[in-house]
Image 1: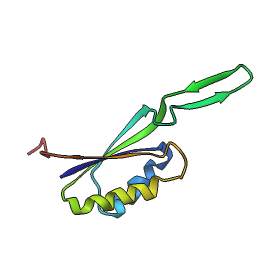
Image 2 (image 1 turned 30 degrees about the vertical axis):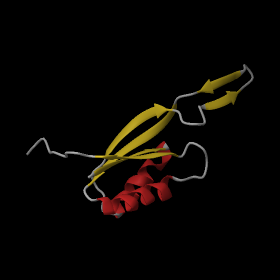
Image 3 (image 1 turned 90 degrees about the vertical axis):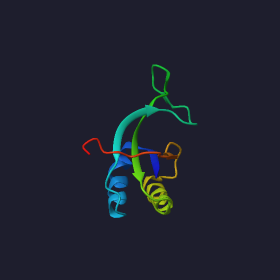
Image 4 (image 1 turned 60 degrees about the vertical axis):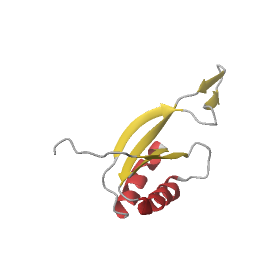
Length: 105
């Protein structure tokens, strides 16, 4: 099993959720996060002066898939859906999952 973690722009969250659902991926965890990547934030200039916003709001979507054959499909779906072609589109991280248990059972 693998966990696929995608960090995406907030405005792309619904589109990514819908695209994953269309591919048969229903279970996911969604978290609002802040951080910065290689762009190191956004610099704004106004009449008072410059200021840097170095923590940018993002959405983290976590999906656990059972078989590795579905991994590339999920990655491609997220990439195709979340891509704007601009810096700050996000990241995808894939990690192995040793156990996956339901608390109820």
